[in-house]
Image 1 (tube, rainbow, N blue to C red):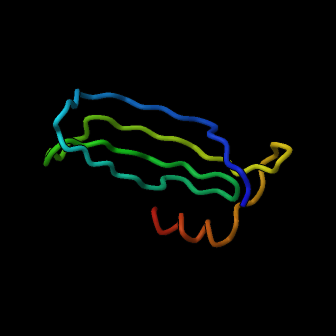
Image 2 (cartoon, rainbow, N blue to C red):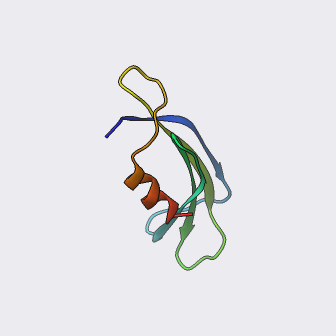
Image 3 (cartoon, rainbow, N blue to C red):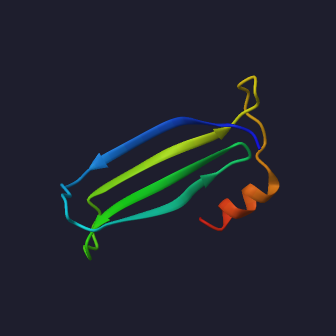
Length: 83
């Protein structure tokens, strides 16, 4: 398995969540390339249908030398299911 670098990340906070609120996190793959994957995240509190925060991050699979490499076929198949 090759290491992954977080090439990009971001979060937009829409409203506060505080203890003891129950937190739910949704994750999906929004873009899937040969060597990278972009995940979108939604953070929800309680039974609220609107997100309290939305974000994203990009993983890039790299060699030990830090160059992008094609991700493992099985990993790609699993990530495809999250689209």
